[in-house]
Image (tube, rainbow, N blue to C red; front, side):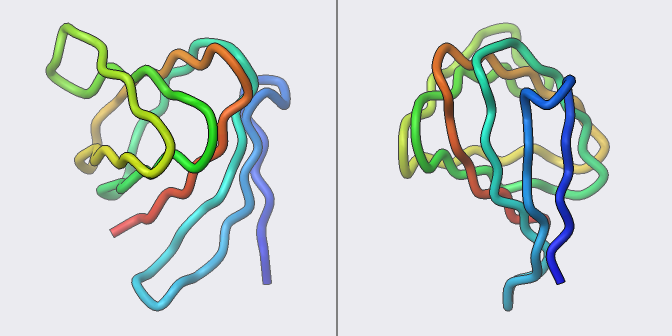
Length: 93
């Protein structure tokens, strides 16, 4: 069964499901700036739009476009800047 999640007053929404590799979410983000924390290692792939990300321990920002992926370690925080609606797939490994 699917589980839906909503964050930041509805500006970020996702649907959780299980893949052969483990837990995953597919979601969308409206324009804005966000900070998330991780409880497992997250493998985030941009599906649509662009995400500008500040990864843990880095002072700079990096842009990720469709089909590009970034990894955030367990128990860390990361920041995102979203200029236009974006979609993603996140695998929790």
